[in-house]
Image 1 (tube, rainbow, N blue to C red):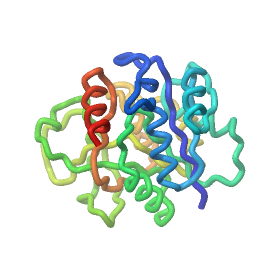
Image 2: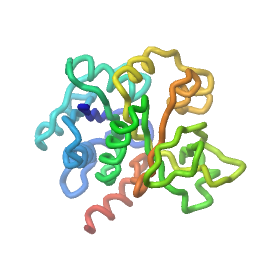
Image 3: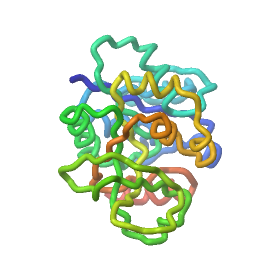
Length: 243
């Protein structure tokens, strides 16, 4: 089975405009993500961006990138446009990596890809253990409720995704926004209307569950820091530059 990795990116993020091109160790955030994905060595890696500056930066750093439209509602729509434009004939799985997580663990990318291949799942994603009880009520931390407790060797189904959790149990984990789709599942997903549940909770993965598409979840080694704010950027810059 062949995997294609697509990283959606855009400069117009509301909370931190221009973040893909912010630099850590003199390399942009988006190019760091590209390099991590390349090191995972699971398939070809492409950045899908609506801005020529991102394309130029990725190519300057030895990466591959393709321009996409500016009117996509979600990153998933952007990766689908890129996939259609690229016109690969022999791809079975498409992995959607977040363009703002420059310290993502390469082992987790490999692990999700392996689970997708061995299980023939429709959609797979990652989650990590919650070590801070404040995360349950923090609406910026998305939680996934799984049908079984996540372990290194299992790949259970997601029952629900929530921003806020009132009742805590062992099957609740911190959801990481990395997805791997079979080509058929991706095509079905992007052709579905946004569900009320999705719009209300601002979580596009609920569209899949609302339309009986199953999502399986693998346990991640660690939670990468997503860069959403200036504080996030300074924190991750410090960590990665200290190394």
